[in-house]
Length: 103
Image (cartoon, rainbow, N blue to C red; front, top):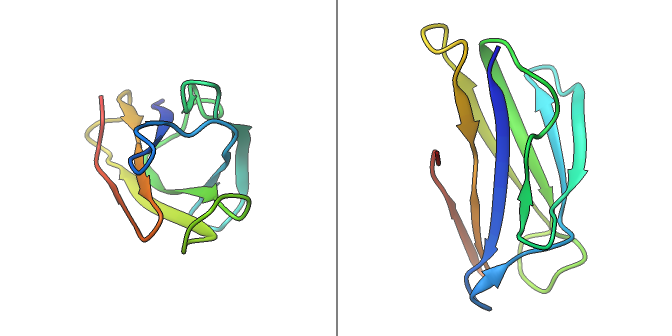
């Protein structure tokens, strides 16, 4: 089984985004885990182990200044990497965001 973690960085302020509610959902939109980013903008781990499949990480940004009230990032845990670690970071600015597969 694979593990999931995340990290939110506020690129406009140049620091971690603490206090961001984060939800891990499966392909059927079932909530698997809920957490809040710590002072370093991290959630590790986000829920328990996950099997191969498609998942989404939802970041609730409604309480922050900016254009996006939420960001949802879909990602896949492939069959050939059933015991991997999937780090899904969010780089956030008031009018844009980006992500990548972290380590």
